[in-house]
Image (cartoon, rainbow, N blue to C red; front, top):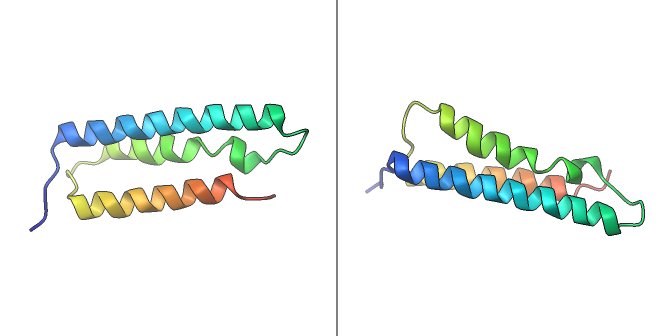
Amino acid sequence: MFLILSTLDINIIRKKYLYFSIFLLVFSIIYETFSHGVISNYMILSFIIPLIFGNIILKLLKKIPNTIEINLYTAGITTLTIGSVIKVC
């Protein structure tokens, strides 16, 4: 019924969040360079969300989550990250 993930799967997910954090950091640096002075602190610091929630929190979990929990967790992190990137203030 529910697929239980192994620690190897969790490590793969953590690597994906790390790569996504690096991508967001590079994206914000490039955007800041070519934005003609239009910057947003939310977008510049958006790489912190998947870094903290995707790597550190998943490492601290004692119980290995199932696929539904991971999918909901990923949807939440994605929503927070995209909201941070498109925030205007």
